[in-house]
Image (cartoon, rainbow over all chains, first blue to last red; front, side, top):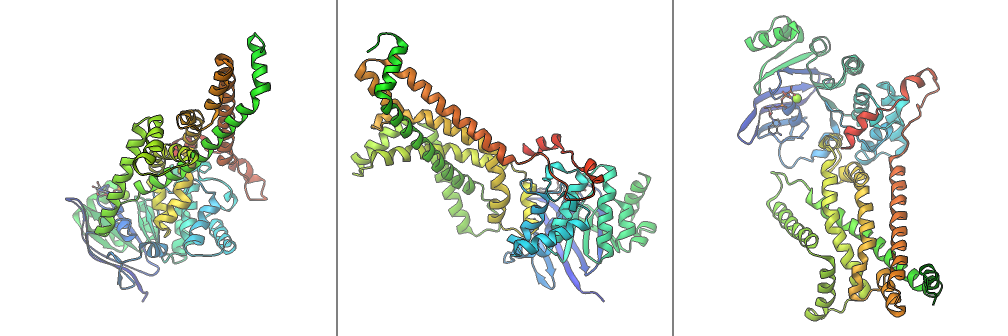
Length: 246
Length: 264
Ligand SMILES: Nc1ncnc2c1ncn2[C@@H]1O[C@H](COP(=O)(O)OP(=O)(O)OP(=O)(O)O)[C@@H](O)[C@H]1O
Ligand SMILES: [Mg+2]
């Protein structure tokens, strides 16, 4: 039995009067690959951003190894160094080369020396197939290349959990594959991942759990085979049939 | 003294060249030092103005931040909204009349120009910081960087690059505007020129020389800054770190049109 890393209890989030997440319960164990699916505006990004403390939950707990990190006393930067995030819009540092992008966090946050930071940055860039581009600036890369660098940057922090918010949604179709391939490889290596995605085939084939959200509520969650072939919830059925039709 | 225009110019340069050089040197010292200090002030104020105030922050921190912002806002508005020449008179003569402080002329000069530049730069820096897309801030947060680290390594270097043209603009304005300091007795280029003109009754020729000097100073500075900007931008191409020559052809193009979007 693998260890529980993140456990969310009764999490709610409101922006002013607008309630975006309602009473979310959810947990992730080491090695889990969880895909969160759902229509636009259902609160998937907000949930992920809460998990990374980019948003502060209104009520509820987020337990990280049993410790509630959703209260005000948490050292958010230290926590984020362990729970990384990859964004739809890449969010690379435009003033730094590819290599520097992958080194800065190791040096400034993990306090590694430049040499070992460089060595591990190179190793992760190699892994995502971006090693030849270490001297390039983000503006000189294609979307798929940027996203692979962003993944390498996140991996270089040696995170325990990696969150992905629609990592392929901003990419041209021919670049989606190269990013998904990297993520597939990470999954097979046992990295714990929570992935918000509209790539249903990826969710079905790679994840070991699928969470379907609608209107700020988790409507259904479970084994991908079951969710995709035999959804129990009416909303899940409708969502999936819309998606499968195209 | 020669009677023709060019003869007089040559004569002035030969006999009073030292005054012009002195004046120009003083002008440049005040302009450069004050632009630098002004930028430091501008960055400090701009950074404070953009510190995010979050709901969960302590009440005291919020109150202090709001108070400091109000004061800084007032500083910016007052110094931008009144003429520097009036400020120079008011501060230099007022400080001794009202507070009994005897500022040295030079201190007053640096103070007045710096504080004015700071007021303008504060807004520029604030804009420069806000122009960097918040995604990069989130990217930095997501790898565990603190607000200060994010500012220092990600946001400010880009903001600085983006506002370089404005810094250059301010330097050029300062080179020209130091002439208002002649009202408190600083012997900068304008003062020096006026003295020569008055003593020899050669207003036209004296100011012709001054105009040329001012232009050379401003033009040189603007070109040098342009070069510096180019240098900050770095190379437009990059070398693929590989020995596999096949990949060279596929990797060497840069995405120019995307660059434009990101710079905005
Ligand atoms: N900072 C914010 N302030 C106010 N409302 C917000 C904010 N962020 C998100 N929302 C609202 O929360 C709701 C859920 O947004 P969220 O981005 O989490 O949806 P999503 O499921 O990720 O959608 P998509 O698939 O389009 O990315 C939306 O109605 C959105 O308008
Ligand atoms: Mg989203």
